Length: 173
Image 1 (tube, rainbow, N blue to C red):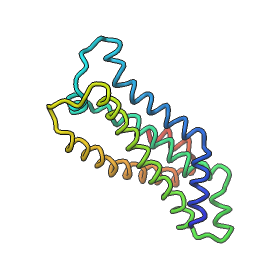
Image 2 (image 1 turned 120 degrees about the horizontal axis):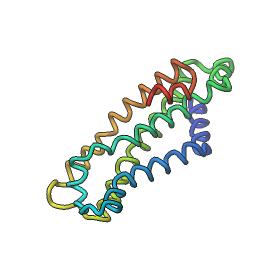
Image 3 (image 1 turned 90 degrees about the vertical axis):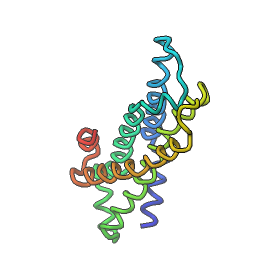
């Protein structure tokens, strides 16, 4: 199983689509918060006040999770790599966990990066403010790791059920 996980990380590092998706999701996530201020000349509020009532923070990380899990777990169904690994002597649980572990790590960390980085950029630009203490907000942002991991598990289940990454991307989102 160690070799399967290593090969999946090798594949993730060289997968250009995943990196493009991370950059595009990050740009979209950041622009979603900054464009209303730049275009409508709205008054820039502090980061604590802005993110306390803004629930749009979760849209693009979930989209990234769908694409990442589809690329990590589902692409090997198209060229039957999973089948050949089982024929090569690996157990089915090794093949399964060899894809789930990288999907959990990349999905969880990628989702956290996409969630925390816009908050950091907005804070650097406009300051935090005094309305909300930053400690509980940081704690809540880190606690978002648990729903991200749950969503990754759901998307992995759908991927292994339909055995097609593109159908999973359509159904999952």
